[in-house]
Image 1 (spheres, rainbow, N blue to C red):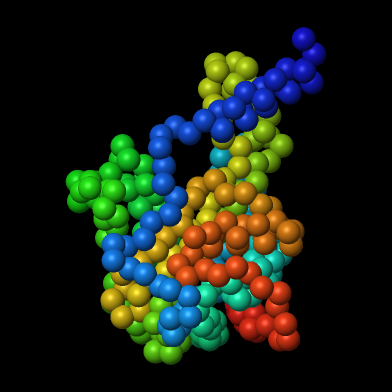
Image 2: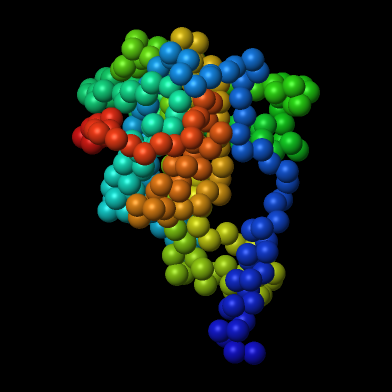
Length: 261
């Protein structure tokens, strides 16, 4: 069999592997008792998405690419501005922050990512649930928090809720893709090529409680291009509380977040 045919067969098997989940996994959750109807009079403060894009080396290490990240950030920011009309309630973007305020925002962005990863591992995957998360899941038990310190973040006094977004993409290098094929054809091991994680969460700015979360470690859409970023933002905000049918944007849109310094 020629190498091209072998490679094609290997990739087909990889596709089947990806299509078959290892375990049942949820992707969205809402805190019990929380509702946010459209036009509720509430205000949502959107913090600038945390975006990181790079390559996945042959050994699986993340290698950040500044140009990819800059382009992806611009695309995601633009897609988010376009999407805001469908969020169902008043949306404002967090003001540009400096010094200690900027560090505080960055700290909470990292905290949000860490909590989201914990939710995926310890609650979304049924087999890994912590004892405190194993109560009747059908009743919607979802109890996670970022802490009350969120009410001190820039812009928090002007809003009821905060929307945090985390996005990380590692595109498999040529070496990684070759390793994926060799590992499958040799010892029959599955090697993952590329990682595409995205988390979006709504947080109560008074209590710090995580009210709604959409977290997925295998999202679609190439954020390095405009259409791919629109797809990604659509996935991130899928089932967002109070969402209304998107309407054509007329007039000036909400200004995009100021670029990070």
